[in-house]
Image (cartoon, rainbow, N blue to C red; front, side, top):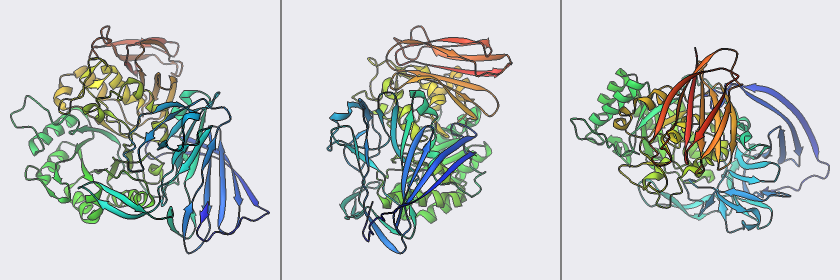
Length: 587
């Protein structure tokens, strides 16, 4: 750690130790209603300016710099090196530059082939022989985000974007840094810098229950009982291609009332108005086809909340007036898009949005964003974020990277950092050879049940139903599942899983029901699901599984029910790109 007014470290370093064993109760239950937070801590007092803290958990280790200096100062540089004694390969989210949506696939490389020219965002995963190690960070505030490059041998070297010196606005949503300062951050007074975190997993599935990013972030002391997670009917992915109506579909009140009616019928909490509802440079100017007062009144009558999309630039330029107007309209949240940076200036923007939204009891979904770093523990109104190579890629991905293997890699890497707005729910599904990108009528790669399983496996307290209501109305059996599956969980259990191959998770809902989701890569396989986690009661399980012809036609599935108990073991057959879901209810 190099400060512009640095003092030398003292020779006789004083050390403090501490042990913590507590239970955290998240406002929004992403994995569990209670989180065990147990660690040993060591703090080294290096001089009058700097301390270095370490925490050791059962499932990971972390360290951070704690600056105790007063007045104004700059962090000139921070050196981060992570080396492995016997690492064979890494799942590496290769990037082109610091200007990025962080929507990456995970390229597998031998660790010694990753050199200084290969830049990556976080998180990144390493196979270190007898364990998997995931590198990321937590508690990122007032400081730039951490990226990595390879050292060409056995590890990574950290790199961080320097403070912006000159920026250029190139469109209604893009502001690029064209010159940078020779320092990372401008600070004042005592500061706690981000935790550098290594999650350590003996089994791949252990990554799916690791909550260290959440645990290491600072906690809120405010009342966020008003925060309401839920599912969302989304307009943009399906290009408003609704049919069987007597009005011209598009960005207009009639179309959004159709979405609201759909959400109301199936108990979905929200409808999002994505790009097009307003002037993209002026959030106080809705388009003539949108009457916001009429639309919000209609939504309120139907017990559905509305969420508005905005570019970050438009919100930044007029945040107070825009958010105040949203509150007057009765809007429930905002979806902020296209930041594409994590220098100190942009990281501070995220916190300002979270703060200002919280003052007005507005929810936040960050798109065009960097990875999660635990902000939802301090600002529980920040429910989810993108920073993931998600379903939208089906609209244009000619390279077919948005495939089943990618989908069963994400939970072990990107999702370990926090909620991800992948936006699942496609009702047009195809096997790999039959799939093609379509902007206005997109389909997903893999089976129908592969999509359904995402609602159990993928964590997002704001979870999209990405397809259009017309398609969902045609699928009452699927809506029997999608209307009931929750977005918060009392408990999570990993039944089996292997990075890039398959995953099976069981989650317990607040009403006592259990949901099980299984997802597969392109290799057909049979898995066994052991229900020993159930209590002594008798249960009914409703199953949605790949049909016998799902390997040819991804839409093929079958719904069935049977009685089960804690002694039951279910045989699950997964097609290539397949999936399986079950809802377990007490008899």
